[in-house]
Length: 80
Image 1 (cartoon, rainbow, N blue to C red):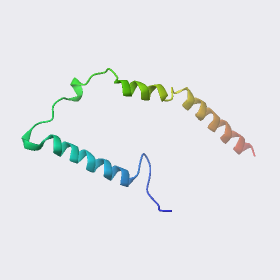
Image 2 (cartoon, rainbow, N blue to C red; image 1 turned 30 degrees about the vertical axis):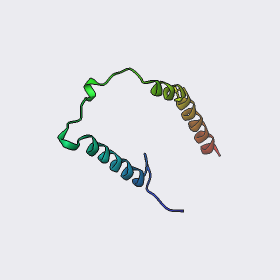
Image 3 (cartoon, rainbow, N blue to C red; image 1 turned 90 degrees about the vertical axis):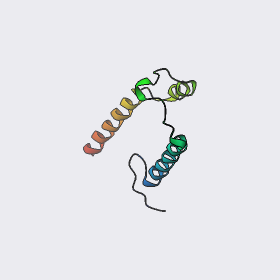
């Protein structure tokens, strides 16, 4: 098993993402063309794909339940 430093991801994944992003920007700006659009002009409306993904996302209630269960388990562990 190889050891990777991980947190919110790993170094290999970050490197691949950076390379793909750089390649995308280079392809879109060939010939001196500027990329169009900006974050301030972006739409707040979700695409159908985003709506589908959101329908599968946790609501936040699950996170609170998980935290409560973990807290209770820690308390039980301390008692023994």
